[in-house]
Image (cartoon, rainbow, N blue to C red; front, side, top):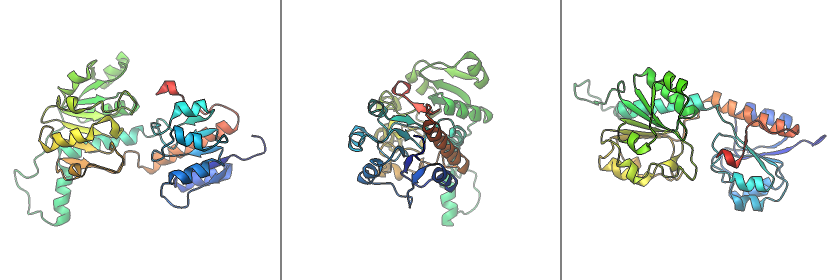
Length: 328
């Protein structure tokens, strides 16, 4: 669009450096405070936009796309996951979709290991005692957890993040097992010392810690359902830093309460902020508020990718991180 600045609507507050650059390059409509737009607010704002920059909290479904008119040409998502966007309908309406892949790999892998350690070593329980001033001194049998070295880690989804988790877990002495849509190349398996399982059921039954690192798609919804959760060892731990919808949260809660699974570390939830209250009460569960990507470095790199995707589109080229339905 020569001579005309793109109108870019941003649905949430981003890092100041990112917002400043957006304002320098485009006619940026920034959010004055860090609260989500209502659906009606977002529809109204998007009708006058060339580019929309949403986040994971914004549902861009077919009715939304039908309500916004024909001006919008690019959805430059601030985040890697796009399961909140109806990519197929957007494509049919001539709207491109881009995301920010790769930049959160290390941060999410760090958080996965943090949750594994937090659950197996009962760190939140110790922290709670200290914060309440109830600690009465060291005791031989107090807060006994388990050593992670030597345990079998099963990784569900061996993409960039899954492999980064495997590298960290190897440094802790864990044995790596994985299930993936496609088997890794032999040289990567050798580097990670990873054992591939074609059968997810067989892997689940053998591992001590299960890390969920696959995206949410129609084929992965409730992939960890009640039947599969029952295959896990009673001493096993489940950690999820991917998408909440992959795990049947109610079934997981029932099994944790019954002692059929030893513990869980969760950073994502099936129904967003509407978390099963019985899950909150459990001492063998560590719950975090979707902090896996929460580093300044990661959020800045996400913003830089958004900027690059919009600028490349503005220059008449295909955004480097364009998402198409066949990729999902």
